[in-house]
Amino acid sequence: MRRGNKEDIMVKLKYKFGKELWTMVVQSKSMGLFGLDAYVIDVEADLAGGMPAFDIVGLPDAAVKESRDRVRASMKNMGFDFPLGRITINLAPADTKKEGPFYDLPILVAIMQTTGQLAPVNPKYAFIGELSLGGRIRAVRGVLPMVIKARQCGFERIYVPAENGAEGAVVSGIEVKPVEDIVELYNDLSGRREIPSAKPCSSQDGDISEYPDFSQVKGQLEAKRAMEVAAAGGHNILLIGPPGSGKSMLAKRLPSILPDMSFDEMIETTKIHSIAGVLPPGAPLVKNRPFRSPHHTVSAAGLSGGGTVPKPGEISLAHNGVLFLDELPEFSRSSLEVLRQPIEDGVVTISRVSGSLSYPCSVMLVAAMNPCPCGYFGHPTRSCTCAKGAVHRYLSRVSGPLLDRLDLHVEVPAVNYDELSSSAVSESSADIKARVNAARRIQRERYDGTSVRCNARLTPSTLKKFCVMDDRASMMLKAAFEKMGFSARAYDRVLKVSRTIADLDGCEVIKSRHIAEAIQYRNLDRKYWQSV
Image 1: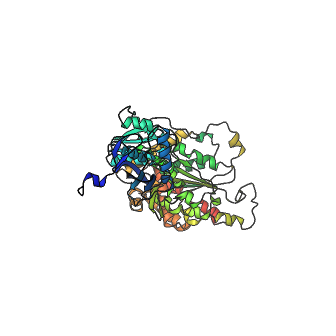
Image 2 (image 1 turned 135 degrees about the vertical axis):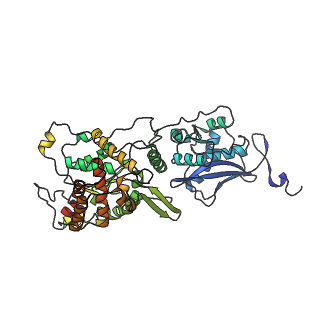
C-alpha cells in the first residue's frame, strides 16, 4: 500500500444499518457570539474505530459539552442511527471559548453527514439551535446578530429554531429557515420536503404598545415642562420631592412623549435584548423605546453588565430608551458610581480575562428621590422628623460628580386638593409629543452628517458651533457661572439644555429667556445639598 493513498488516511467501518462507509472529516457551519459581535464557527466531525466515545474540543463550556447527550438522545428518539465509534467534534477557531447550546444543531448535522444519513451539506448553509431530548429544536438567544454576521460572511441560508424565525427574518439578503424538529430539518436537507422561509418583518409590522398618558397626571405643570425639555433633547433628569407627589408617575410616562424609534435604533436595541435573552417571544423587533427600572438592590455588575463572558446590564438594556432609578440614594454607592462614565460616553466597556467588550448605552437617565429619609425636608407644611445629621448622610449618598451629570434638577412638590379634585383635562402625551418631534426634527436637520443624534450628545468640539447665543444670553450665562460656581461640565449642560429650549421655541439663536429657564433647572442642588 503506497504512502499517501486514500487507504492510508481513511478507515473502513461497518455500521448496524448495513452500509460500508469511508470515514472522513466533515464540516457544518454555525455562528458564535462574543458580546455584540458574532463570528463563524466551523463544526468538524471525525468518526473513527475503537471503543465508543464522544468528545467535543475547541474550548467548550459545560453547556456545549452537554450537547453530546442531547444530540445522542434526540437522534435515537427520532429514529436516526447514532454511530458506534469514536466521535470527535472540533469547534474552530479552537482558541475562542464557546458557550451556550447554539451548537447542538450543527453537531447533529455533522454527525449525520459522517454516517451517510445526510449528503454533504452546502458550505454556504449555517445552523443554530438547541435540541431537546425528543428532537425538537428550542429557541436560543442572540439570533439577530448571528444572522447579520452570517449575511456579511456570504452565507446563503441559515437554519434557526422556529421560535427565532421572525427575529432572523428581520435581516434581508439571507434565507432564514425556521425549523421545528430534526425530522423537518432532515427532510429539507435531503430534498424530501422544503421548509418555507421565514417571512421578512419590517418596522411597520405589528402594533406598538401604548404607554400611560400624561393627561392622567394632575397638576405638576413645571415638572411636565421639564420632562418635555428632557425628551426633546435626550437629557438626563433628577426628580426630587416628598412621597406621593408623582415622581414615579411622571417617569413612567416619559416614553409616551419620546420620538418613535427609527429602524436602525430598533435593530440596535433588538440585538442587545436578543443577546441578553430578554426578547419577548414572538417579538422579532423591539419597537418601543425600552423603559428599565431596576430595584435599588441591583449590583454594580447588574447595572453595567458582567459575567465570565460579560452580558449586557440594565444600562445597555435601556439603550435608546429610559433608565429609571427610583429612590436614588437607596442604591449602593458602587452601583451609582459605575454609571458616571457610561452616561457620559454612551458606551460601557467591560474588561474580563476572556476579553474586553463594549456595549452601547445611549440612555436617558431619570432619577427620583425624596429630599430626606422621612421625605419632608423643606416641605412647606409638614415638618421633617429626621434626626440631626440624617438628612446630610442621606443626600450625600448621591455624589457631586453624578449630580453634575444630571442635566435637569426638578422639584416635584406635593399636589394640593384643588388640583387633585379638578375635572379639567390635562394636556395629553400626544400633544407634548408633537412638540418634541418638531424639536427633534430640527436637531436631525442640524446634525445631519455628524454622529450627534440629539442635543444631549453634543461634543465639546461641536458645542460652540451649534449653540450660538446672543449678547444678552451670553452675559446672563456668564453671571450665573460666576455666582453659582458651575463646573465646566455644568456649563456645557446648561448650554445644551438651552439649545433644546430654543429648539422647542423655534429659535436658531439661543436667547436670554432660554438661558434663564435652563439655569433654573440647576438650582435644586443648591437648595438641598448646600443647605445641610
